[in-house]
Image (tube, rainbow, N blue to C red):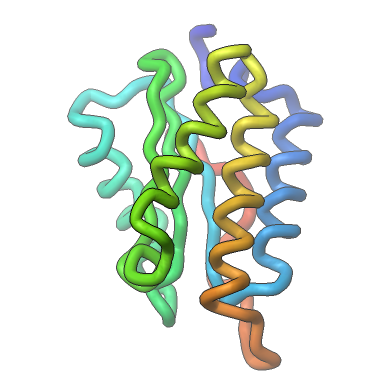
Length: 145
């Protein structure tokens, strides 16, 4: 797999976007997925750069979650902002990563993303429930680098 466009089919991409919308439906939290061919620097550092580039650090309650995937490097990072990191269980991101990784190892990239998104969404919903004045602060579309 050499291109980020090959990582998901157009239909799978729409299913991932639908999962983001479902996950965000009952929360003020924001979830983004970013795909890149590869990371020239440490993958965690790159995910942090992308988090800032996508303005995910500007959410009102600091409850943005980024799933960053470096396709050719076969690696990914789940990056949560301070607000969500302060309230999820200590092993939450690791357990979410393990679920996603299990799917990715079998080539089920869409399902890995969907399961990770929905799991993050449940935590966001629990700790940051939707309020009547909430707005979708960030786009739901998958971004690419």
